[in-house]
Image (cartoon, rainbow, N blue to C red; front, side, top):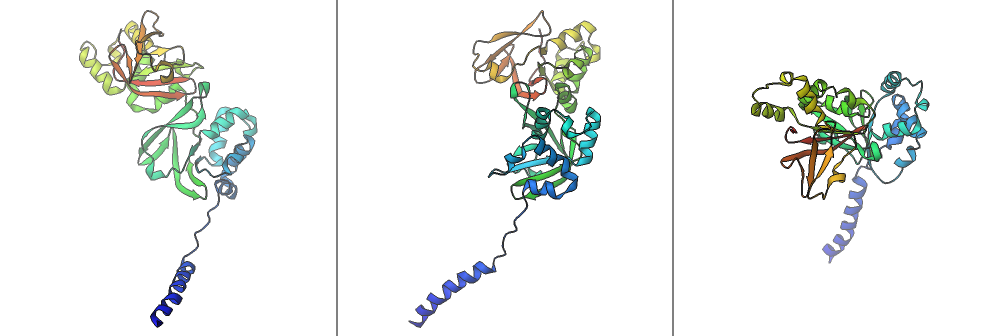
Length: 305
């Protein structure tokens, strides 16, 4: 009986002691509170206010901010010819800031080399992509992460060394070293500069290893420089369209359809069932890399006519 009585008294006391022995979990400041507390982030916080985005981050969702400090914003505005954040058209500033935000908590150690959809919109509001490269450091497009994993109560902040600029098709081509041969072809074909103009365009690209195979099957060429001017212009123009053509536009196109390219003498046939096929034999490797002025599709072979 004494043992039972002792047990009834002791167990609640043990639980009570355990509760009070636990150290209370530290309440971390929110994303907005963290931005307000550090003067170097004042311009990013100001941009959230100007664009009316600040109110979007007071709910139950978690976000990751990739924040350039004020010095980075100042360099960006000087480059673009803006005297202040308020001089940037609000819609453009909003899209730029959204390009620095991801939904959810993204820790630096979980970031991998890949293309990532952003919250910013391109033509017809299709999401623009990031090119992320992890190689000793983490780079998003041409901006590098300098401070990692600043934890907040409702998300995470990573500090960037520059503003992450919205990419044109030319930018996406420039940033990927595996597409340097494709870039060389477009330069020879006098279409490289077109990829920085308004558009929208659609570009089909093959990576360097694919071009190496192309040269093996065409032994008269060993590099882009071996192509004649007319061959280079014809081949380059066959890889670009003067329109926006995404996967959504060709899906369920079982029998295939012909599409006009910059090479007006030759069309591309695109069919789609369970996968997208170009000219009956070339497959898609990566679709819908959206830029500000068009979309890029990575394909498994060089398009020939």
